[in-house]
Amino acid sequence: MNIVEAWDDFTSSDKLMFQNCCRKMLRRTFLVRDKQEDRKHYFFVVSHIEIFLNYFSFMGFEVRCDKDNGVIMLDNCSEIGDKDKLQSNRHRFTKEETIVLCCLWLLYVSRMKEGTLSSVIVIGVSDLIYELEKYDARDMVNKTALDSIFRVFKNYSLMDVDGNVGDIDCKLVLYPSLQFSLDTNEFERFVKEVAEVVLVGKDSLGENSDEQSDDVE
Image (tube, rainbow, N blue to C red):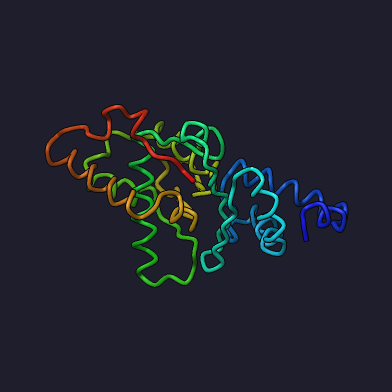
């Protein structure tokens, strides 16, 4: 069934839900099954996946659905130049955002390897601080910087914050979408580069940061 036929068959509530899902995917990139505000949108897309694939293909996007992790991702797969790709559905991470994202990803993977049954991981801010200290990056991200960084990550449905950053009982809710924000090779490269900063005192991530920072899919 093509998009026109599907649209004609939709009820008025289905049409509204379709529009909301499209806007949300374009704005946030990810829909997460276990994120309460995404749940109904996630299942609507899963139920009509062929229609969404058809619709977004006209714009050069691919809709990827990972049911095991409960994540739907909108990926810009068009053949246009990198500069244009960055203008739609992409975020160019700063050096600080990249380091924090890498640390959150490592924490997420570590907790998953411990055998948790939930795809959503909850950690304390202190866990993140400890991870940053391992890479001698604690001084780079104070409370104000973390507030800003967390807002970016929340906007892309990578995490949520339960409480006020700086409070001892503040919790970070990590979503499985973190696994898809950068591929494994990119994360390994970032870990290596941050480690080199610690070992040789050279800010290799800081050189030409506008050109070297990476993007959320």
